Image 1 (tube, rainbow, N blue to C red):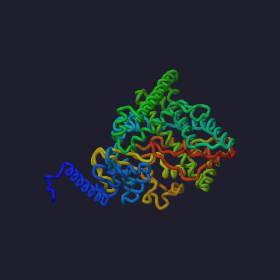
Image 2 (cartoon, rainbow, N blue to C red):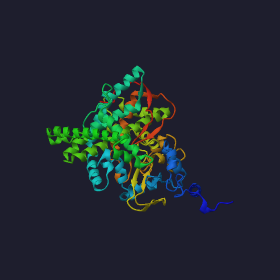
Image 3 (tube, rainbow, N blue to C red):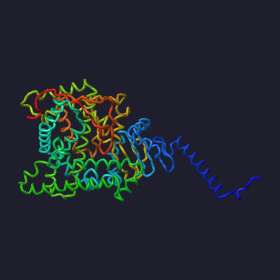
Image 4 (cartoon, one colour):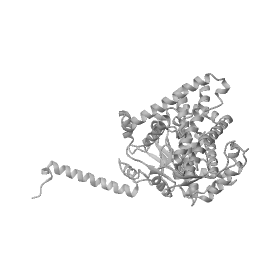
Length: 509
């Protein structure tokens, strides 16, 4: 006898309802796999979950995953939607990048979601604010970064740091035939240099007889944890941990407290010292002294200086690390670079200065090519203030996260040609070559283009000239290293090298 529906048990009804639900879900998922539920190009996307499943599966290779999808998109733009995150448009299209960074600059600010991620560390610093506060700081910083005296201060700082610390360490490693982690050495070097230029203090990180400073250690921890907030599969997790002050968020809070405290103490000491000097002396050195002389609020000064340290420390050391690895893989190009950096310094009377560096065209081309393939910052995001449409036809909704992707752009055949994966510095040379900041947005572009761009090239060119003229660096491992994108990208496991001295004269006076 067939049992009628009214006589089914509650368990049977529940089972029937559940079966119907999974059948409908299966049909929806099948359809979304075929037609990509929300958009034509991007990861497999499902109702409610979005692309969370694919995102989780690819969480350890996000850069290559995004790059592959962008390469298959006709416009090099994709849409990413996942549970717990904003609708995100990712693009490697230069026309879109120009539109975001320049043409419609006012419609694509960093936005509150971005400033929330880095706000605890950077506060109201120039890299983490929009609107009038950004304009005010930009105008102030622009004046300071364009002064000839600052450029000369940077050169003298580099000269002392290279000759008195970096060269002796490398000579000792060469004599003892010890393996050196070049990435770690460069990070220590750039931290010392940027602290001298920004704060007027010497943390002594490059001195092997001294322990790593609390400021440097806390800065590293705060940067790493802040970066991991942005790649968290579900943002609510880190926000909950922050509210409860547990786990990584507690460590972040403690690290930021130390960074802010130490920088504020330096500001107070600098104020006392500058009060003892005449007005001319107090504005001719580091950036902190210049900002203090302008009478600005202490917290604003603190946040600006922290932003400068973050931007100037890890970005330049990352670019240099990848360049030294690439040159080791391309000995013919390295030989040309060595010839270029050695020629103007053959005499004891010749000092490596700004004019010498400007003539080193191949060095700059190599740096640009290295940053094209391994950008210090893999991606950068803005948030749409109003509905908009990008030049390639992509619709942008109010509140969408819009990300331009330097790492992926450097690997697009549509942008760089069929040799897009090759290290070819020649592409940057020649009187007719003009590569816009929207095709190569490593230093951003438009109104927010990096103020420290010239300073960064001075520092990197100086280090390349000083080190390659004196030393040979041979990586211990031959397999390709892994590129790890945090706030700034680094080489996983460092760059372990053997150092051999070429002989030669000091790069100073």
